[in-house]
Image (cartoon, rainbow, N blue to C red):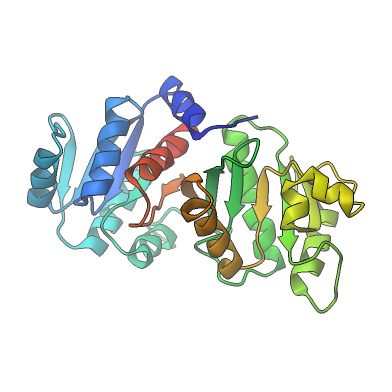
Length: 298
């Protein structure tokens, strides 16, 4: 069981140093996070972007660029393509979003001929350290899939489970949540949850334990589950919370961070390598933790 994001930083330090390709790297908060990860020998940065801006910002934050490769590309979309190509050619191990919109970066990642896609669904996997929960809690999907259908939800689960496996958790507990904990044919989220649970029991979704539908209180509180007569190994002890759509996912993710006292780190899973895709609103600490998680998944 992992309780704190700092444990993942230590895990990353013990693994081989990863080469991190940063697309459109001329962003102060991003470079500050990359600097910290570099100083901890978690990553070797490979910076793609406006070279003069990268050097200027690095001088401001006392980031020594000696022996760090910089590819000069002022256009953010082209910088994204270049960073993706470095990963594809084996010259980098992890991809990170810098000062480029998510759309152009994902377009480069998903390019059929030159990208990093593996055929399945890409999804946002957020790890949250909450002062009110007894271990790290994963929330998915908060940023990519707007209204995932059943097959996409299965992929979203598989991506999150893959992330946990890479971090050494062999049998993560997955709660597929909605507004209620019973199947209601008028609520698609509940019927999807029931099917996903059945798929897990029949071996179609492997190496994890899936239960649903569960309301969020049942998923994270044993007391709430017991009060409602729910008997489940997942209830009250979930590792992964699967939300029905991007609205609920994004609201829960940001609520845990901004009013719930949580610290988060997130990656995109489903590509050939983890993709560090942080928001401009994320703190430097969150960005650093996201880099560490991606590196720890080696």
